[in-house]
Image (cartoon, rainbow, N blue to C red; front, side):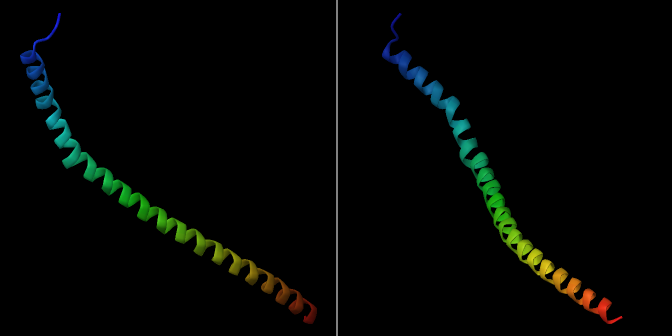
Length: 80
């Protein structure tokens, strides 16, 4: 059964009418929300990336301080 041009136009218009609200929802609601989620995710990632560098630097400082404290404790034990 072949469709007439009128049938094809009708189907096309019907599909456009059904698709347009979905397209508007995606453009006006879903896309901005996704962009907001992406923005939050990337800013959080940057903070954590910077935080891990600070954490590693603090760990190195603590390791140095522990070594110095151990050396000073040994020297104090020898003195007393």
